[in-house]
Amino acid sequence: MHLEQPAAFPQRHTHSAPAAVRDGDGARRALRIGLGGPVGSGKTATVAALCRTLRSSFSLGVVTNDIYTREDAAYLLREAVLPAERITAVETGACPHTAIRDDISANLEAVEELEETTGPLDLVLIESGGDNLTATFSQGLVDAQVFVIDVAGGDDIPRKGGPGITTSDLLVINKTDLAVHVGCDLAAMAADAEAQRGPLPVVLTSLAAEDGVAPVASWVREKLAAWPQPRSSPAASRA
Ligand SMILES: Nc1nc2c(ncn2[C@@H]2O[C@H](COP(=O)(O)OP(=O)(O)OP(=O)(O)O)[C@@H](O)[C@H]2O)c(=O)[nH]1
Image 1 (tube, rainbow, N blue to C red):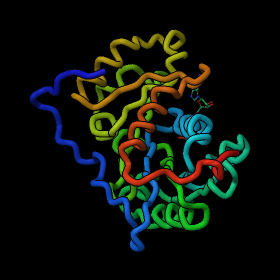
Image 2 (tube, protein in one colour):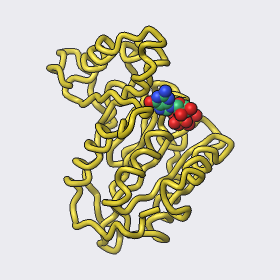
Image 3 (tube, protein in one colour):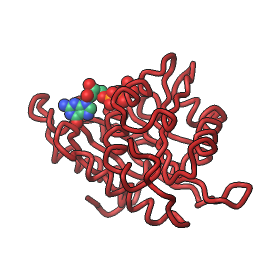
């Protein structure tokens, strides 16, 4: 889904960081993808579905962010989407965006520890706590970011803009199965999103459907294919 970029299209400031794929020892590090978006839009459900879809092909790790709890990590552990040692939680104790943008040290530590203890990993998914439309990840923390909104939040959300909607590397409009129940015009919502994003991709998902995460998984596979260095053995990440 693409439209030509409007003349007044805002400058991107959160796009993929240049690939710094080697750590201090010259070893390859995992691709880091951040998932942000409003409360309840389906971030954890997307992470869970991505793990189930990709875990047989890639070596995965997950870092979740919650304000006061470890609920998202607990959910992923209960669902056994990955072995327990591959899922870790950061309690932000403040607005979620602080920990993914302003002071990323706790998240960076969590990612690095995951890689040290369970690596080499191909991909680390970092889920932000639910926040508003302004929350984006620091380029120092992630290589690419996905912004998840949902139809139940209102079909005018793409028109409201904000950096997650206009500049994320992938915009996911989730819960399309609910569109009919909340009177959402999916085509208009997608068109508004495309108008805001110019050439940046938008996908529609329903995680209630079997393999509903497929469009996001395809995008992640493309990112992984473009990530330098050979893949490590996927066997260790199988749940
Ligand atoms: N009908 C429907 N429900 C969904 C879909 N995706 C997620 N949900 C449900 O929406 C609720 C919230 O999903 P989560 O994945 O926890 O949302 P989240 O963005 O991680 O929420 P926070 O971490 O609290 O911000 C859960 O009850 C999910 O089962 C979908 O595509 N369709």
